Length: 184
Image 1 (tube, rainbow, N blue to C red):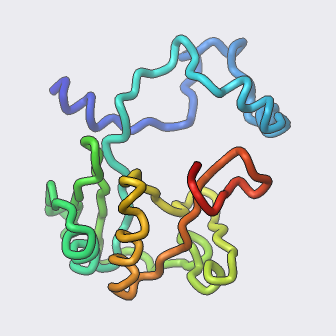
Image 2: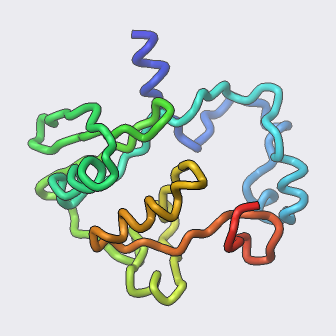
């Protein structure tokens, strides 16, 4: 049971009254006023009493087509399907290997609401024009660490399936945009 608790705890950003000393916490409205330099200075390293997290166990998305999802992760990317759960309501919960013990998980329900491009996902028409914004609380993208020498090969492999593939962008603090065309 301890192992289950260790690997399946979901954390909520909502504080429970009395759990922490309010004197040490900076309220969100004050954090919003901090400059990038102030943010880096204050939060650039873990606090001494930080939670000891070994990594991400899984992140779960909702799929509109589980067969297509399995095809992409397993046939195209070649990753392993590690767990399948048939839900009591007829839905499914599948887990794909995500590297270093992490999983990429998907739920599927027959009666789930339709997709909402530009709200809950990136609107592909907007993406192609450079606008990749999404709604608050949505997932914008997932990025993987891969061997640098394989990045372009992997991109071509995925693009060959007809999937939309964005340009390669490297996150950096060295440019005004936050992106660079190559990794230093």
